[in-house]
Each structure stands twice: as C-alpha cells, then as structure tokens.
Amino acid sequence: MQGPNKQETICVHGASFFEKHTGAVSFPIYQSATFRHPALGESTGYDYSRQQNPTREELEKTIANLEKAKFGFAFATGMAAITAVLSLLKPGEHILATDDLYGGTVRLFNSIYSNYGITCSYVDTTDIELVKKTLRENTKFIYIETPSNPMMKITEIQAISKMAIERNILTVVDNTFLSPIFLNPIELGADIVVHSGTKYLGGHNDTLAGFVVTNKENLAEQVQFYQKAAGAGLAPFDSWLILRGIKTLAIRMQRQEENALYLAEKLKAHPKVKKIFYPGLPTHPGKAILEKEAKGYGAMISFEVDSKETAENILRKVKLILFAESLGGVESLITYPMVQTHADVPLSQREALGINERLLRLSVGIENKEDLLADLFQALE
Image 1 (cartoon, rainbow, N blue to C red):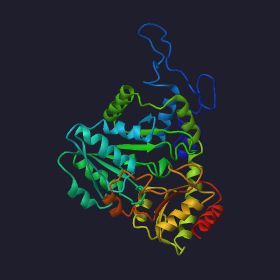
Image 2: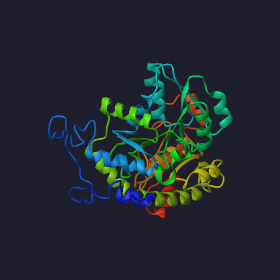
Image 3: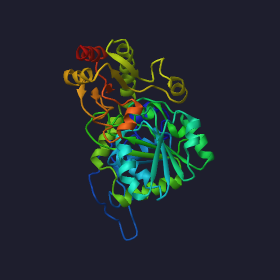
C-alpha cells in the first residue's frame, strides 16, 4: 500500500497503517527484551531491543515520515537525543548555537561536553552576517532553536543552512516548539532535526522521549551506532505512548495555536503586561520569516510583567493553568524561566537576553480559550 503524504493522515495511521501480522489498528507494544533466532545465522530482523524493537521502529519511521526525512531515531529523552547528535563531534571541534537556547541544552554544552574538548559559543542566529563573522575554522555545527526558548526569536533556517553547506558545516535544528506539523527543517536545508518528544509529539505530559531525524545516510549510520552502543533507545511502552500521542498531534497543534493567538492578543493589552513575545503577533520581528518557512506560529508565549511581585502573584494565583515545568501538553502550563528552565544559563547571559525576574513562559493547551483568559486575568489582578 502506498503511504500517505499528508501529515494529518500520517499522524493518525503511522508508518504501517496497522500491524501486518494480526491487523491490529493500534500498533502493539512488543514488550520483549530479546527475540528468538530461527537458526544460526538467521534473524527475524530483531535480535535485542537495545538495538531495535518493532514498536520503536514503527515510531521512528513515523517521525521520519512526518519530518519528510529518510531516517528517524527515538531516544529516552530529548536530552539523550541531543547527546546522540553531539557524539558526532570530535575533541577540538566547535558548536555555534542560538544565544537564546533551552537551559538544559546550555548545561549539556557548557558543563558536560566542554570536558571532552568540545567548545560552544552563542550568537543571535537571527543575524546571518553576525553568524558568519562568529564562525571559526573548527566550527562543525550551527545549532538552532526557532522559535527560541524562551524569547521566541525566529531564525531563517534556509539562509543559515545555505551558508553552512558552503562551509561544510552541519545545521542542527531543535524543532520541539513547532513540531513537524508546522515546520520541516530538512526541507529548508537542515542536516539534522532534534525533538523533545516529551512535548508536543507525546502531548499528554505522561512520558519522556527524544528524536533525531536526518536525510543523510552517513549521519544516520553514526546515530544508529550510538543508539545501540550507548543504550539510550526509547523503551517499547514509551514508544507506544508517543505513537498514541502523535495520532492527535495535528488537531492539537491547530487548537493550541488558535488559543495562543487569542491569549497573546488579549495579554498585550493588559496594563501589567509590558512585553509579549509571540511570533503570531504582527509586531513580532520574525513573523514574516516564520510565515515564509513554516505553516504556523505554535502555542508558546513569553511575556514580561511590570514587577517581580506580579510574576510571583501569577504563579501563586493561577488555578486552571498549572505552574509546572515542560510544555506542549494538552494542559496549559506556566513556567518561570530564570529559576526553572534556564537556571543553568549564566546570569549575565540571561539578563542580556531578557530572561529576568519579570518574565513568564506560557505553554497554551487545548482548554477553552475564554477559561484560560479568565484564569490569567484573575491572576493578574
């Protein structure tokens, strides 16, 4: 059967449509660590689940199809996926990264991989000329988040990728915030895409996962070897949970974006909200680039209020919206980046970016938008 080419259909039916042996519509959980060999030198295609498992394989093919790529790999967490990508580097090599980057990624770059002779510098990747000036002879990766976390900066992936290809540098894009429904970086020239599958792909705040996607066979071979050797592959049950979450990914993204745009427009008019960062607003400097490269704005909003006390009051008073880390689930979550997601980012870097004691980050869920607005406004009183 020819596979679907529309992402909404891929989400629902996955890579295989159904399990070929039994016709099961919900792809089964192959909760087995090992698999029987028919005879010496023969294999069913599965030997040991650290190397490959049918449930994980179905998920990996599905995410590759959604990202319009050839190869996908599922890992235990988003950070495990990023670690797999970093395994492609050698001591003495350099990463040039978006300056406004998830704090856990900064921690991994600065505190872990610096011990192995890999260096990282940070730059505003929305400024292509600045990126060119900051490149080094030993730069091997340009690592992008777009929209960035939490300031929602928009990097032009196609321009960065074109420039990187000319210099034999790999472009890595974290596509967690927009998901494959709204953005496909591989089509724009990126070499590698990573996801925290815990977020929109899973969508229900009930499991952890990470993904690496690429079109390049040589990179895929190296990532696959790392997955097998390091043992960081996603477990069968968690693979099934993410497959189940992906079934509703397209409709969740559409509803969450609708809610986010509504809330952003209302929040910007509130007297206690001094700045708002959402790429769907006409005032956002990256809106035109995003409209050229993506199919949506996403559902992440950051906003700065008038004082630290107001921020603390909001976190204490919200009822429907939950004060919790993470993002991308059906439940709306609000986060205080400077002490939660970005605590490991150096203070001077945080302040330069605007990640201060007045900044809040909102992951908009699928609840009724008027209920969400009422909760925010009562917390702002």
